[in-house]
Structure formats: structure tokens, C-alpha cells
Length: 313
Image (tube, rainbow, N blue to C red; front, top):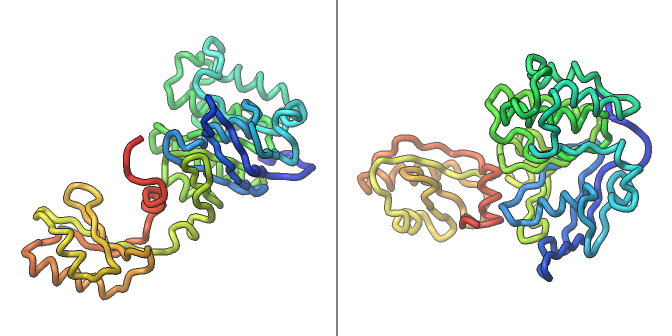
């Protein structure tokens, strides 16, 4: 399963601006998706990531800045890019009256050197549904078919929008396997997802978008920084202000879920192993019996919430 070749690779977005009704939804955004790598774009709803991707796909014309896909302008050079770029269509983009296998074979026939449709159907668990019309497929099956349609032409760059959202574990892992194969074959992948574990597992690089700009980017390891938090659970109530005061001004304590708590350094730096003993002693003195207690690595979700906030939008 190898991609096409020739010409500059990857995606480069510089100073992108897109306005709706005079309001900048994307406001001077810079983004690079290196050739042959998986780049995940994360952001809360309304952050501007969907508009950014639509500008990269040539579906919207920027109001400012530049977008280069495989070295070309996605609007002016749309004809030249069409056979070289794959786009994962959302549910409404597939012909509902056609059979799944027919849809994939039709798209394959439009390309000079497509992947074997039967291979993709098998990889994504769709062989048994090849003769089923799109309207009769389940949501997850249609999603996998959309992914197959996006990659069957051996694209050099592919846009994947929430490729495994709502899938069962088996289907999700099949999608992840396909994305890993695309990377191995040198395909540039731009992935948008709300699933932090998916981004952490698949992405070589991650860009976090908020309020129309990239607010952080790097490898998963660079973003999480290898930093740790002490997590514990308890049935008894915990006075977090008293705990934080006892541990010192450079530490913070917070509730992450009912009965679940975290202790971190205020500057996000690494925690000392001795902190486990300090917290255990404090809990004992406060009459709180922890159900579990562990020093865990800071997760991508922690980073995401720190960057974009915890309030609903």
C-alpha cells in the first residue's frame, strides 16, 4: 500500500485568516504537516480547526495568508491536486442508494494506480457488507467506507476527520492499523480528532488550535513533557485547599472527577517521588483513607485542558 510520488510533500499553512460576518474564525494560524508523517489537529468546538481544514482542502477560500498542499494552492490548483489528495467524506458525502463495494470500485476506477478495493474492504471489515446499500450500513460501517474511499486512490496526502469516533474497539483498531500503514508508506496524514488517546497513539506531531490560532505544537512527548501528576481516589471528602497549603506554594491539588483527585506542580514540572509519602501522611492525618494512589505521567488530555480551559463552549 504505497502512496504516489513526485513534487514537494506535506502541508504548510502561513498566517491563515478566514472571516465570517466580519469575525475572524481563523486568525493568523500557522501549521505544518511534514511529509510522510501523521499530524493531529486538536481543538475544542468552535476553535477554528474545521474551517482551517476546509481551507486546506480547497473548500473555502482564505481571506488572508497562504496554504500550500504538496507545494500547490488548494483553490487555484484544485484540478492538479484532486488525484493526489484524499479526503474523508462525512456521512452525507456518500451515495446512499449505491452498494458499498460499488462505491469503492467506482472511486478506484477514477485513479491510475488504485489500491485493490477488495483489500481495503477486508482490512476495514466491510467484505460481508460489500453488497449492502450505503443507507443500510450502520454509522460505523459508513464511516469505515468513507475512510476506504479517501485512501483507495493511493493519495500522497490524506485528510481524515474523526476517523474512529463512535466505532467499537475492533473497528477502531482496524482504522488505527490503516493509518499506521499510510505513515509507513510515506503518505502525509492530517488527522482531526477529539479522542486524545487516538492522537497520542497515532500522531508524530500534534497541533492544538484555540480561538483561531495554534496555541501549542510538537510531538506527543514534547507536549506532555514527561511530566507527572499524583492521582488518588477516596470515598471520604478531601479539603483540597488544606492539602495544597500543606504541600507548599509550588503544588496544586484539584478534583478531576467525583472522588478522584490530582496533585501537580504549579509550573507543570516533574514531581518528586517523595511526594507520594507526603500526600499519604497528610491523608492519614486528615482521616482520609485513599482507595488508590499512583504517580502517573501527565496525559495529552491534561495538556489540552490546560491550554484550552475546562469550561463548556
